[in-house]
Image (cartoon, rainbow, N blue to C red; front, top):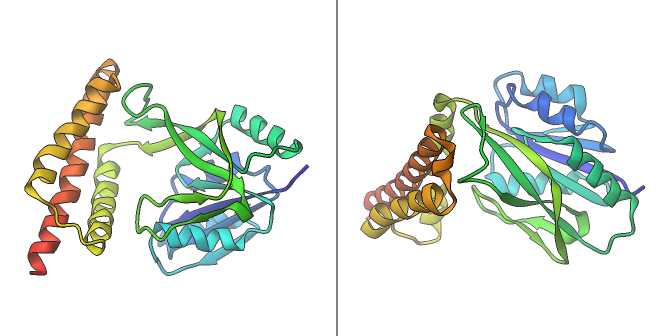
Length: 249
């Protein structure tokens, strides 16, 4: 059977990491790159990881690329610390590793848990490219919302990644503040401005997409909050971008 490396980057993930790494403990090697956590993240990582590295935070893309370069197996599975490999996905990956597949990378559907509820509408399905041949993939340099660039063929898997993304609103807002700042900074570096149309229209368009087009209203109050907070995320990102440009006139 072809061997598999699992790579994870962390920052203060003590509430999530054990669940994540336990679900991937069958892999041939686990590599954790920690960006100087101040909680028990590294202690947890040491129980599972064959390789543990410290890295001064460079952004999501460069951090994941650093982890990828430490992998030694032919295949790589990239996980976020708040994700869990479901048992059906585990079996499906094992079948791929045991086969002579000509596919170079696989998209995996994330099933997200928002405020304690598994979301079937609004966010679902959410396919992400996570399983790939090491010599066929690399991460871009994005500060946030990094992209895995695959040079080869791809397909989709049926098994799900369980995504424990937002257990409560306090952690959602904390993460949103960090992510919107990184996103605004990345857009600013690419020369974007944060126009009035971005601030006014993009949040509304995203709300309509999640709540109506993707049937988020079927999730009840969870779906309404999901659409509202997602649109607020976009509003905050572009407001921060506008402010960066205003400060640097």
